[in-house]
Length: 401
Ligand code: GCO
Ligand code: MG
Image (cartoon, rainbow, N blue to C red; front, top):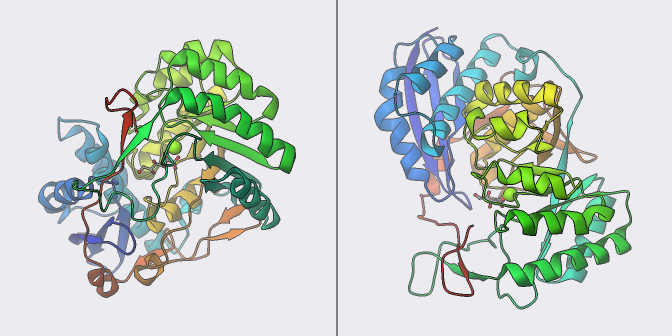
């Protein structure tokens, strides 16, 4: 089965998405996601200018060989741009294989370990009362887990998840800057969980994201203070590249720790997993080299008791989410999948068969990954340059996003 075409579709139905479509001489095509929030065109060029020409004429069945060709063959390895581009190719080829064999991708990954993967929703607001109401609403809808984020009193903006449209406009700048104070955050976060747990009880799993803004000792203190609230996880406490920091954090708290949405390969988390410094690895299919590489991360983590809790913010397209659902039902140590509703217009462009059932994401029964793209509709939503907000600390210096 020869690859006859490979093209990149950049579209912005509510937000930017980069999709790769690979065509074969048997009339079967597959799609993969290469979206890298705020740096989308770098991946589009990497694919268009460098990988697509090499794909033409290759056998679409040889997924592993194609992965190795692009990873090892480039000499310049790793990094988010490279690994998102490789992921787009990889997922498109798994999609083709599923369609060629007339079977969903979970069946190619060893079959099901479960019928659906538990997901978590997002309660996020400027007001704590509103956050509590959101948790209650999600619980009533059947969600088993909810991430809790709230505006820190004394700060002007939320952090971590930009409000809709943020980043597209700034005052005199093409990007938005937001003030940050770790001290104010640390005073508030434990009280927030005191209030939320008192209101919603312990039947719902709660999660929280610190977005890389703490030092190891601050993280240890926060984790310790939150222990009685029994979080499912405390995410991204310190900058993710500081793997050794987790030794300090781990010695100070038993709150479960998650890290890794910005990781691109196993090498970014090898120490964290081998030393059992974390409980959940958050690497995603799109940013960690596709299904083929994420499987290897998961396989490495399994004997150490580390489970996956893959990133799934709205910048991870319905294509990645489709692949993630197959990965989540097939992979033994997949624990939870982040889930964020995509912008409404995304369903004009993408058509997917995965769905939400009682707090679990479940695959549909189409062959491949079960997601398609309407290229005509995609052309109606032109790319718009967008940036993630920049964080500035109270002393004026740039902080970690
Ligand atoms: C999460 C993430 C997101 C990221 C975003 C960056 O846990 O979902 O931290 O909120 O900030 O996906 O592109
Ligand atoms: Mg996060």
